[in-house]
Image 1 (tube, rainbow over the protein chains, first blue to last red):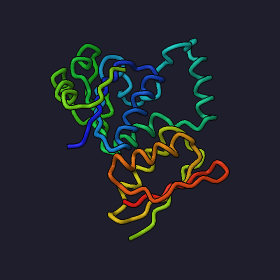
Image 2 (image 1 turned 45 degrees about the horizontal axis):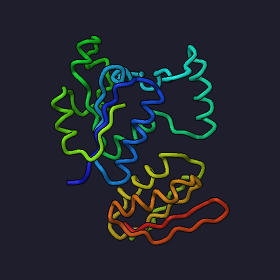
Image 3 (image 1 turned 90 degrees about the horizontal axis):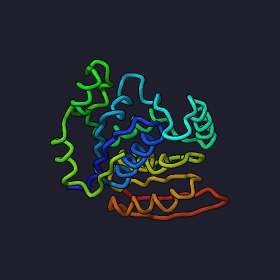
Image 4 (image 1 turned 30 degrees about the horizontal axis):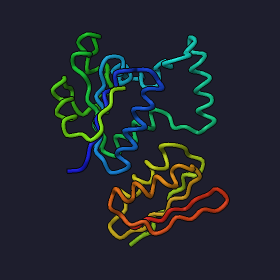
Length: 139
Length: 73
């Protein structure tokens, strides 16, 4: 069995979702398996049309900061989150949505991008993934 | 046996690495994948990935900031 990376995506902040997806794509590209467990604010990013909607974790300034960073990212030719998540799925990455968060936040499956989600689970699912992972992160 | 060419010039982290992996996945055993790019870190990271994947690194060349990496699946 190949090595694995399991990442909890707790934050819905744009910059942190970038980190999670870049690391997860890196793991897949270097021959590992990868699982992303979306919970709390992170789960908001799996809502239909929600992926790019996250604020910046610092210096958001009512959107001005995000706009500035986005324009600099565009200049540096950084890939969009949409592209990163689609590459992630193409390379066989797994996405798990936290059921408790769905309940707390009143999110129905219909409101989520179900085509991206492999599994709906709770902490046991995370532990099963993490216990045989060489890398596990909380972002 | 075929030769697959990938151009990631101007692309930044993690795209060169991801595109290299995607190409290596579609290649058949014995195929040659040739990746051309400009992102500096990827020049050393793609060979690391090749090693981790147990594939064969044929060559790494660089000219005027443009590198070319050849891999045998």
